[in-house]
Length: 55
Image 1 (spheres, rainbow, N blue to C red):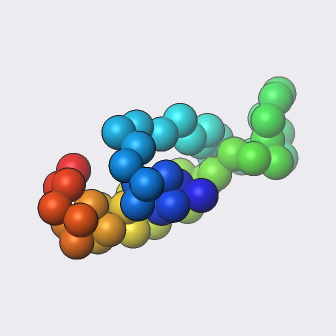
Image 2: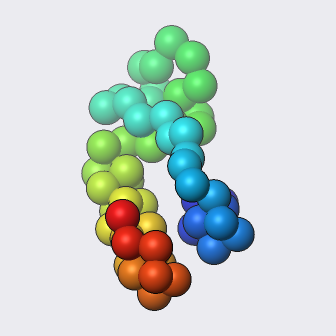
């Protein structure tokens, strides 16, 4: 969804990150781990460059 949002012109995202989503007090199932967040950011940067919207 984040990649789609960027492709549609979003200028920002709200992403929940938790080191152990299972233990999160709220929204654990939708939280990314720090490693997943790093991977997401790498993918977003690639798309941003292709679209001329470098981050």
